[in-house]
Length: 411
Length: 195
Image (tube, rainbow over all chains, first blue to last red):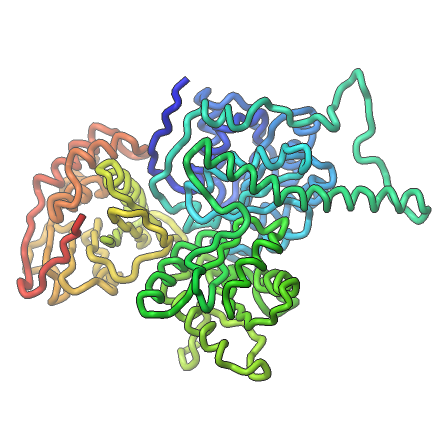
């Protein structure tokens, strides 16, 4: 079989579809929703053209999508789906069941802002709303990383020490529709990397060996309570195990493909950095460009990009944050309860482990398709630098809204 | 880095044109990123697409606010959209228009103008006002940043809803052949992309 990769020019949705095709899923269930639709159209085409030997289930909604895949996964199939924003909301009930069932699915979340007001564009409010449901969450910066991460996700999800579903997140619009140069690995390289398919060693549906799946568990008696707690503990262990598995899988993928991606947290120009921006997803490229410009102007800034968000890479983040004196965290979502960005709140939690209460600013931007440009990141760098010189009692806990109407602008 | 913004109307293929041009740049060994604008897409409504080209990897996935070059694939669009917003001094305009140079509004510091009667060619070629492939030919002729051969190669990788490959190939070649290139405002030197 051909060992050569080839160069394509495609958008993030097509890149994801290539990653899925190369991973040889058995069952793909879909329901279209903006900005995910073209991704499942590409997959439908692969299957219709006979290039991907998978069962395509075109079902009546996202709740059915994931319910159908649960059955397929329990029967031993490698599965895939993709959704966005409101589709994820409609998928919620089977979505929260999937990690507890320990089903190693892979699903793309083409991130979209949530209603209301009505909007159809990119934002990360959808994924942040489900951040503690037990799914693993990884975020991609480029179309290449989308393709590669989908493939890696199967190794991570199906690892016996993990056995959890993985969401590969890529931002709607800028990454889902942004076209760039992508290297498509050969099928033989991906086959060798993924190894023998062994999706369902723990709970095979087999008429000759009937077993109960997901029995009623818990209750007030001590035995039930302990059993329920054991399931929860086991899921937490799987999550924590994933940190090492994700790291190993990225290292192996680098050997197989020649492409290196930071598995948990990427450190960009942190050497001698005074401050760093914390970024997540497709905003990171523009942030790195802004840091390069700041460095040329003599400002010691860097970027800490979060690749793996669930499990949260507490140690990796604390290690990176330990190299700087202030952080500016840029979110494409809102934590209403904390009046800041959700990633910012997570970073504060990790910082507690370091014992260093350095200034942390929350920046919120890129909501509902808004552009986060180099100029926005330059402003964030400057504000974070200024926070260094501000005494703790004078620091404001309020977030900076990067795309908000400036004061004095007409309403 | 060379930044291009393509303006058109929904249905004319401005977004597809940006992807084809990105493919052609990559085929010639460059890096390219194309980002479509997104709104309430429908036929006839103004749309735009952003395209960056460089000899090194491009990281920013953002829109373009200060283009080196504006390609306008519709002759009537400049009446309702400020296609020149942010264009750099010494920039390039590639405009679909059957009018004479004197009738084309443009910033005083525009250095290069490529004019092509793309609508006339489109109606003759397709019987429909779809100008995207024609204007890619006009861009190649005006700037010399991409070869006609690379564009035709990229066309072959694209999917067309409204016309066949052979029709588009001929239309692209006509766009290249029938574009008038004018050097304006000589004190502003066009920022030639240096590879």
